Length: 253
Image (cartoon, rainbow, N blue to C red; front, side, top):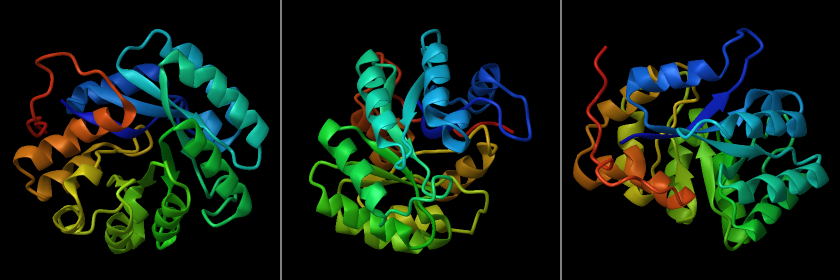
């Protein structure tokens, strides 16, 4: 069983791939479930993208959704969260701090995170460099906030270790277009295994990058199972059918 907590649905600005590509990529790498945000919502217009994703998720049992939140349009975000979360097809929120020009420390971002904490809605937040430390501080400041540090800080992945140790409600996932040797192995050895997730950034990035990073860490036993799917299932409240919880074998290339 593999659950990808950082994926996307919809066309990017350089391709016309749509929903069928999500499933094709998942099948290629043995990914059972993915939590996706709409590219339109992340890059262009959050309400329009959320609405489009909602219609797609109705017919796809392997995809769950993030309600994309633009901190500069909080009224729209609150409306979408209250409409889509109760459907059960959306299980969290996605915030891209760069596209929305809303750093984690900005007032509008803190308002958005406070709203998500109140709604008990897990948030996948784009982090880069030392902003992962800011996200950990936000979790400490907002009781109940559960946040995933997207890319686990990317260039600041060593900051992610300090961040995760500071707050057990901060989760880390490894997707990044770069692959420094030993990056995920060092993080996995230094933080609580219950705070580690698997994410790929598909369909923007081929999952091979994230799979390689995790495979190189040589995780075993309960830690491997937690990274592959169990932590994600617990965080999002996903029901895993009996017999589908075995640790995955690495995909053949």
